[in-house]
Amino acid sequence: MEKTSPTPQAISGVADTRSIRVLLLANGQQVHAPLDGLLKPLTDRITELEARLAAAGL
Image (cartoon, rainbow, N blue to C red; front, side):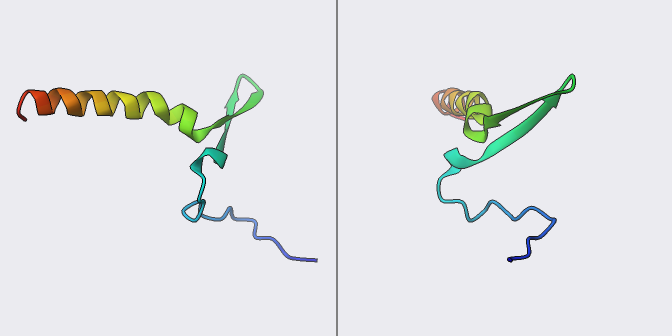
């Protein structure tokens, strides 16, 4: 039997980031969601702000 580490392994070696899931806890309930889905609104907003700054010449 292979011994497993009690410490989670780093995710830096994951080739497909869509396979990374995040466990969320709220009001005693658990739900898991894809990390990409949680970060997409933030990355979209950053892209939008960068475009606005570039258009303003900053």
